[in-house]
Image 1 (cartoon, rainbow, N blue to C red):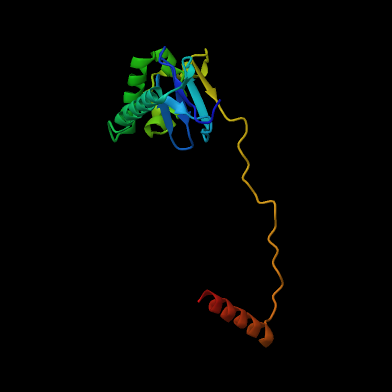
Image 2 (image 1 turned 90 degrees about the vertical axis):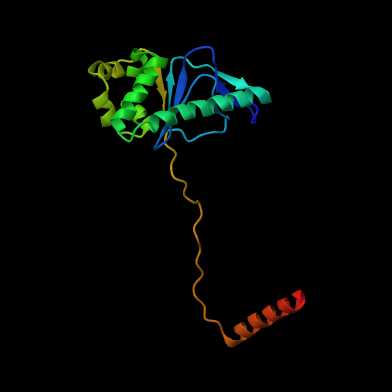
Length: 190
């Protein structure tokens, strides 16, 4: 795939991705740009439904995909700014997802992922969800799946050691030669 290509979620069916980072998550719905192949840094990618990734080719389709991504971001921002109360935000997110998908599918999305979407704690999501949703999130039927990184990258450590020369006391002749070379370089630049 060319490095300048852009992936987007197909608009053909109700599906999407939840892109999880360390401290937040983003929802990417139908028609929205996902990323370029070089984009990384996700801790997990949750699929909702069966999203199909298509290549956005041409200027107009790329603009449309970016526009849809912005629409989905504004939709989530509107839910997040709905209230200062985390329970109200979680309720609004769950009801909005249930209106778009179904309550059975939303019940399978993990609590911590929903919490990352609206800036709440997983305990808050558990308190808001109906009791049947807890058992549904443990029973996986394929409507929601999670891709996690295979391994956490190890911290990069330099493969060299800094060599420190032993201290040396400058003699008068060393200082004199250092000063004369400094004066010579100043004279050349002038």
